[in-house]
Image 1 (cartoon, rainbow, N blue to C red):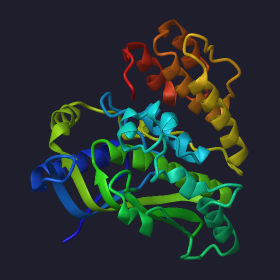
Image 2: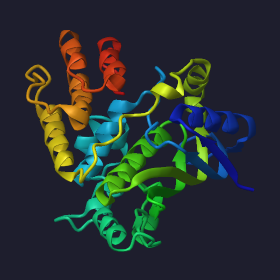
Image 3: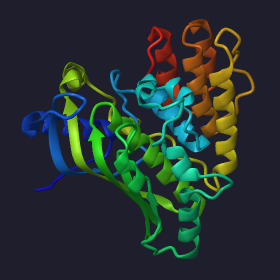
Length: 320
């Protein structure tokens, strides 16, 4: 029997996930260690803007945003994403990640699947064919870096863009926060591209699991509080085609990541929605120069991101 969990915010949904797995999860011992598992789980986030944790322990904004930029770059370079998520290094072969989503989403020369989805929805708003496939037949022959995501289906109904994602497998502690962030950002990018409002986000998982090694961290997260729903939603993307602004963000991300930390000065960053995302990444780059962070926080167009910038003062070099 399948399970459905629904919430308005990411933290509410994640708490429901952990409560369910701990109370009713079945014991499995997969390759990466013992875990609790629930199968055939549907997670629904009714407000896709509430895609980030507002807790102290699961506010993975930097690693999630950095991974999103890696996808948007269309890259399979492990050095790029490992700057934000070092665990990726163990999956690489000759410096590349064969299961990387970026090349599958965006291809080269504007020929990627996400661009075709946008074209389909512009021509035929009621289409049921606006589907991105991330898991393919060749993945069955590999033991490393096998995509956890099978498909993303975009449905435009009554002026709202819904996204339905099918996962073969999902690590509830490490993978789920990143996946919900990236995929709801894609949902909003496509919605802006076709002039639609945001609908609900649905995330169906074949095997949703919690590894034993993460149990102590999960218990600590369940014991702490988090911000109320009224403060949980990210600011909406500006209206209109977003892709020129995305390119500006990607250029800024590359400069921030590749400039040596002792030389980086966080100058010339854009203002507004997209500039705030770059400033969050800049704050991470300057985390060992905390005297620079108050100025970045003060320059934010929206103080939703303020806690993520000022948290770097006390992060002590933490990766997330």
